[in-house]
Image 1 (cartoon, rainbow, N blue to C red):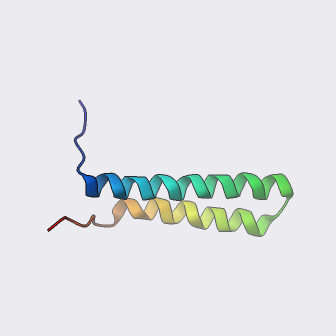
Image 2: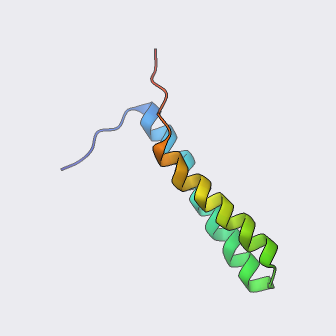
Length: 61
């Protein structure tokens, strides 16, 4: 039921969550202030966060 994650996987997940959070925050600020360029930057960050899912994780050696 629970997924066991090692430190490398957890670090990768932490970066993905941070990227999504930054993208969401920038999108909200951009919409509130009426700055479409900021919203597009946020969309780019969200795409990067999504793409990080498909990157191979580094293994500890």
